[in-house]
Length: 295
Image (cartoon, rainbow, N blue to C red; front, side, top):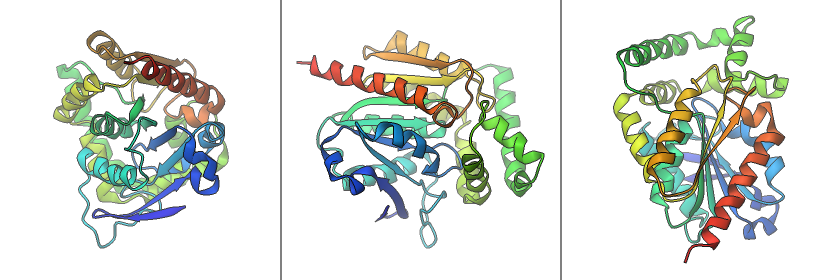
């Protein structure tokens, strides 16, 4: 458990190599969080992976233990990628091809940006539940309405601490039952995250220009890519991730795979940790093998 002072914030992070120095010699996995949530929800997955991988998690600006008071961070994809970049360089993860980046939901956009910035260091990228959609009048209207719902939910978000809204919030995030501990984490993180950061992230995640740029950038990632989606996701329609996978598969020369979890929702790392960890390991191993074969 450590802090990194940067121009944006006092960034809280955890590195499994701090408790286990032998992890310094293992491949590294950097996890990038989704909207309005701290890094705590990755903990079960870390337990499943840390025997073989050095795992790094951190709280983005506006969430968890990261301090933004006295700073003026930009809540944009570039801004969030900047703070992650400082962490990557602080830990020396940009010096050799040992880095796997895993981004969930909005974090998939940040993970994509990082994969482009550190193309020589990244072994693989994983995008979880962060898709794209064909632009139609209907989807444009849907995004407009979603923007309004973001404003409303933030103004009244404390109501999600009380039943039955609490259970409704959890069921929207996780289709399969998760433990009470992580139900509490989801509620606490959402209701206590910085309002300006949470609002900005919610809005840029559905901005059409941002989504267009995101699509281009995903196609440009040079390393192997895994698109992961819960087909019972009630938060973000799973079809968007499948569309992204199909677009990337058709356009990119780099290996691209799809992991579909038929009964899982928006949080596969909590809903079925062992199954999700298995898919990640297979992806990491495929990517490592891919680079061993490169001249």
